[in-house]
Image (tube, rainbow, N blue to C red; front, side):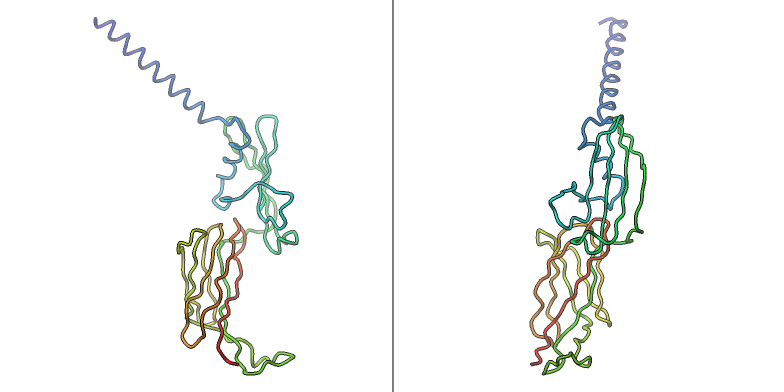
Length: 221
């Protein structure tokens, strides 16, 4: 092969590589479906992880998204609600994103209540009864006592331990968790009978801390 022929072949190869690169960039830098637009919108914030589409038949759906077609792409509305959501949610926060066919994502509006800073589970550990006889009306002196030092283990939907905490002097505990379904299992505690039943709970994307009350049995009868 002559030098000129070799140079021509190299130039042709470079041109082919450049064209392939341009084609790849065009494919990755464009959006062709509503599902792709939703994916880009949900990727804007970590708190959107796990949010599902709006289901009109689902009672108590705290967080959801809706996507509609716009002139040059799509509009994605994302809503996070919290506080008695089976009754409609006391608080909510909404974002509206415009997603263009060129994959550009713009925040059109953001409205609603101030968002909680962290998600997870928190609560109080108590033990009761504290009196051998229950009174009606209840005697404040016989109220369940706070339990310090109780070990609480959290597992995910697959049964894998993801976190654990120990209740403090005032019986409280707090564990930061991402969105998802979990189970809290209290471990045996000194001086208390057995252990409370495991408690299933969910952490909503962007919602407030889930509240749980963990109750041990003192054995007093």
